[in-house]
Image (cartoon, rainbow, N blue to C red):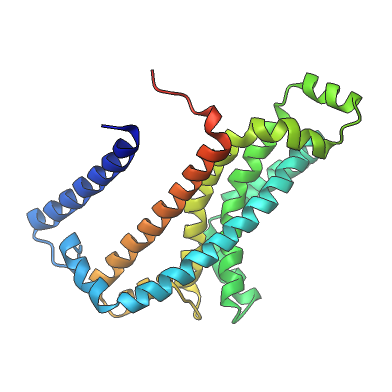
Length: 255
């Protein structure tokens, strides 16, 4: 089996086994679908609401991607500031840790009230707020642990901090950056869906999930969860693809 085929077949087989075990669990416990919907309950929900899934899926995806893009930009800039300045690092780290420790579900109503009726802005902002922290920390750690000899040599040649970042620090931090980005992808989806569910003007898959909850349509709720998982997996593998392009040199072959 070739490596590419294995990389496709193994995750697909794992997903099939998961769905089979889920189906067997529901069957063995004789749970009705208002307690635990089984995989076999989901295709009718997709067939009935396929148009809403397409529209809601796109709304959730673009807001998540925009929030993630902003998180990457802000996280890289903030990470550079903390990585190059010990004073900034000591000042900002406690604030970032404290902010990250606050449950984001408690922040959602505050954001929704600050920008009433601006659902797109609220959702993108929530996705951004929940996902920038790992990126900023990974860049900061990568820069702060950069060998001082490299910095001294480049600075003696007149290089600025920005040049040092692009020529030396960025390649060094790429593996950590992509590792953090994989985490941020899932966090961004969490932020998006928190806002979509809680906001009275919610749209997207989160709003569709809330509609299923309101109408006691449990197969629809579980169908939304699976759709969110599929979107998250797809975006995760986009990051994996980019990682292989820009940081493939850091991958170690298994022994």
